[in-house]
Length: 368
Image (cartoon, rainbow, N blue to C red; front, side, top):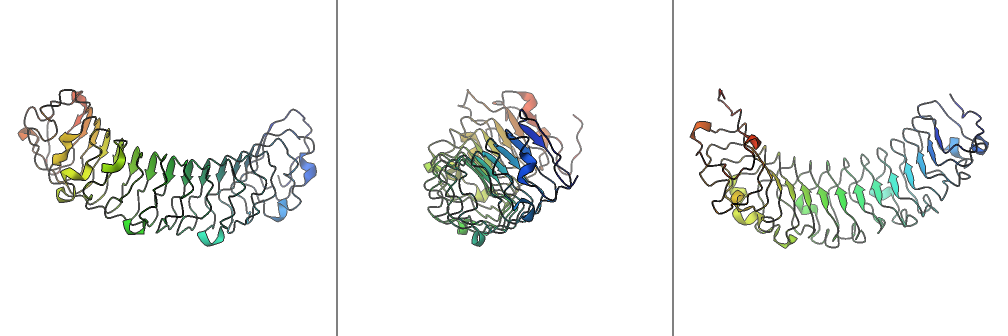
């Protein structure tokens, strides 16, 4: 199908024309369905010329529009009623100050898999989007965050770009941001400005996995609940990195890094001992269970598998004075342990015996 069919249905609110070969759209195509709420035109052959007559402008009740998988290089004229716009996997390379003009009701904007970069996005681009909550910019060509992000923003995904820095200006106005995903980039702790996160007082989740960090970045948002740093090259955590965080941190992901016992001191995690419920230290270079582990008060999940741990001390995991332990799951498989030599009460604080995973161990075969 290369054209929209003639439809006359004043009650129709949803029109799905995805995965066709539509190449041109005229204003008359929607004259019989003026009350559309949702329109899916994804995976067609639409380019800028196909929408040059502004055929979507008259759909005054339209709230959701999907233009994924077409050939657009610019944002077409759109109705001000729109709340959700998807233009992923197109050929967008530039965003001008006028491309979102009038879209004051837009809540969700997806621009993944295009050719956008910080130099091609005007600082005034997002100014009309006064209510925008969710912005997705994954798989573009950003080397730094675009300027002028909407102050209303609550979720920002900008993973799989080439971001090397976060300046203090980039997120300065994003005071309502709750979720920030910058995974799969080129970030290093030296590229994070000292006050980059200083105004993110509502940030709950920060994903910095698959970057180039060699240490946990400093000056993290105070109320952060989940921090993901998997698949970096972190070899140490500076003392008191989490001390300022007001016991908010609940999940810390440090899997697939280069942490040794020398890089993880008792004071490294001060500030997280009361709040942390999930600590992921698997696939590192630990030779023994870190001495700080028994300091945690509310830990539920501890992953230490795929390290080089040879020994479990009697009180290495369970503090003898912690009678109200919350620990439910410990992973120690794929280490260098001789399981039969583990002290009998080493895991006495574990609330469920089935939550202990010890097998297999490297270089050993066991009969349970």
